[in-house]
Amino acid sequence: MAIKSTDIWTLVGTALALLTLLISAGADAAVQPLDSIVAVVNDDVIVRSELQSEVNLVLPELKARGTAIPSEQVLEKQVLDRLILKRLQLQRAKTLGIEVDDATLTEAMASIAARNGMTLEQLRSTLEAGGVSFDDFRKDTQSQIITSRLQQQEVYKNVRVSDAEVDRFLQREGDSLIQRKEVRLQHLLVALPDNPSSAQVESARRKIQGLLKRARAGESFADLAVANSDGRRALEGGDLGWFPMSEVPSLAIAPARALAKGEVSEPIQSPSGFHLIRVADIKGDAPEPITQIHARHILIRTNEVISDEDAKRRLSQLRLRLAGGDDFGTLARAHSDDTGSALKGGDLGWISPGDTVPDFEEQMSKLGPNEISEPFQTPFGWHIVQVLERRKQDTADELMRMKAQEAIRQRKGEEATEAWLRQLRDEAYVELRVGDDR
Image (cartoon, rainbow, N blue to C red):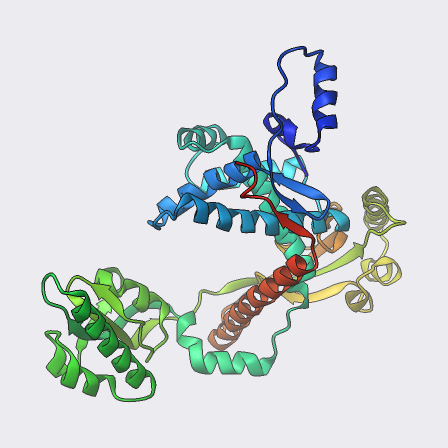
């Protein structure tokens, strides 16, 4: 794990580290106190300055989302829990040899700056003007890339999606995949008087929850609105009509974007009372056509015997043989550690966006037909890849199935990641000292 020069006191967390630094610097000034330890994580420690740096990174996120800032004690606890999980993942990544080189990190930082319409120097200035250390932000970005690669290797590669799951998703939630142009909304209001008492608010809350339960149990939303709504369109069954997405009332924007056809929102409170929003219908377009890539690769996995340098050198040699006229399929069958594709001469078939890890997808995007990449690394090992051809996949039904598969994989991956993180925490030695260091 990279350590900032300004945080050199955290390197070991013992008097020996301090002594070594003082001797190497020839210092005879007054000894500074060690950074206090707030948590022990296996054989590593988290110190107060690291916790404060993480808090400094989190605060702008909360403010940008308009989230109320909790008390200092609550915020520190939440941030420390996140920091512990991050440390555990970085420890696991280290044992697996997952790293991010400076070139990749610099490219990621430049991409972050570009997405925000800035240069790297402008990003640095903006962060520091907001009280966020550029070095801390760079270190956090590096950690995020490493943990993303770790989760791909440990969790997402094991996620499988069946055709039956895709069928069920399309039946229940297919509307969520449509690029929405217009929505038809229904509305139900349980009104509150000006300056309501707490008893009046609670009574209205109970009523709206009861109506939501009835609507979700299958009762007609229009009938419920006619009989119970205080809204101006109650007699029309709460029907507000069609809205282009750009003109949806602010109160209903989130439900209009997220709910499937026929779904009812959770109660929404405003000064006028409690609201229910139902998405009665949707007009939109199927997902945009996607570009698929037909590719093949050769994979060399690293282990106790084969280092990164060995794997890279072997692939470079194979690439020279391919340039000299050797057959890709023959070399893949003989040398690739990806046994599934090796039997097919390294052929991966048609690959859609999101089917592979980002590093692999990025390499394919740079290649023209029949070009072979330089050796590159992903969480699975070292590869060379050849792009055979590209095609546009624009069949609406097939696109919907691909989008559904992607949505299911993401959902299952997030659930599996949560379980994996709990297991990682349960199996670790963690000692909190956050109340002892002040």
